[in-house]
Image (cartoon, rainbow, N blue to C red; front, side, top):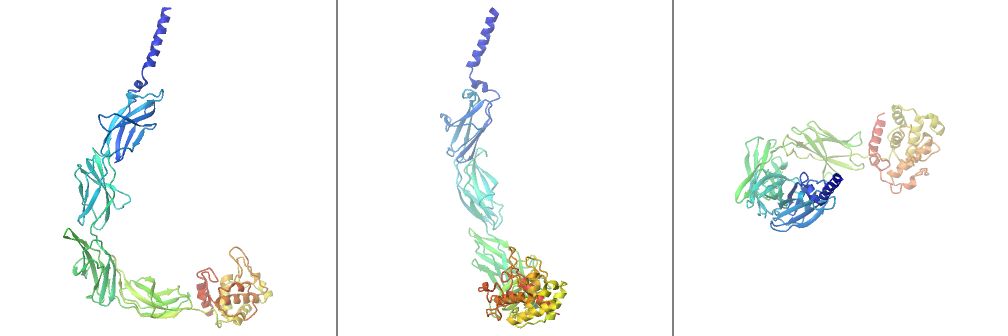
Length: 571
């Protein structure tokens, strides 16, 4: 009985001890907080700590004096806290206390106290140029700092990297000796406090730039005895010096010193055909001291002879072909065009190659006479400028092929073109529609074209092109006798149907006349689309006006027609 009573008493004592021992005491040992406090800007300190297994949340206390009283700042469930309610250059003391999951008691045995101070933001005052490769930075001392970090980028918006550090609160200047002349840089300064773990906010970015080299952008022949050099204007320049040599690597002599407003120079002492090299030096002023950018990259020139155009003729591609004589030393030729001999000439093409002596202008609008000038150019490896000779005298020609007018081919020539295609004439379809063979078909084309004053070769070329030599293959069938797709659309509409070959050809002739002329029809209208041509009347006087949305969408439609017409005339 005594043993039982003693055992009961012992168990009761143990239970009582478990009840009265504070839970915070059980957090000691391996469950202590390991925390850090770091200033990441002038108005923010970041707190971080490890997780405590028994803790449900954490209370953050703070004071701003060693002998001050801790005040509760925040209760959080996470293991990090950003304190944005701080003042720069003030020492802050933090205490992080876990709160137990069982009972909600503060686990004071596991708490930790730590300090941090955020230095004030730096004010970057000015940047001065010390030399073409050096710039000085100056800023005001930042409260709470023990040194400064220097950051640089070539992009104001970002990409900053730390290039150096300065120790000491009052050391407020820095010389950047690693700059490229003429290149723009952006700088930021940030204060540090007692090592780089506590940093202030970045200063606003400030731009710095030394005197830049210039670049020659053009070198041109004003005449056989004059050359003009043009270069980029450089900010901060006081003068520009022009140097010339007859060799690329040396022997340069100063030709002129020009004011800062100048960006071109005319050399009146050159000899025609002789090659010269030019360099420009930018002169600046740094606190009364003359500084130089150094030489620009050289640009060379060789005077070239005037081009002579030998001919301008209509080509088989329905364009105008220009031919000229070769100029010694030229590596390319620029083609200029105007609509009148004494008009304003516009550069329309550049033909590359030392042996180039021809160019075909396929962009000329039909119905106009064009005049051309050709200019020789010479490119040299590594040279910025290009040499040029004088423009040639003007020479012109017309590329127009009228749709209205007298037919210039025979039915036999048409038939020969058709047979050369290798396609079989669909006589089984058209023998009962008035054209038993290709010869009869071509005679109808000529007859119907002549009645309306349309050139038959244009009509027949359209038939061959649009029907694939009467093979069709699209939504229009041979039985429709619709040889130009009248009424047919891309969405599948088959278009108009005509009772025989003659009526179908007559409709095509009338439709083309509607585009080429404003005159009335000579025969009764059989074209079901003619009434819709009011806004198209007279818009395609020439074959070259067809295509690109006028009659056909194909931008090469006129070129293909002209190729067929020219081939037709060879038989």
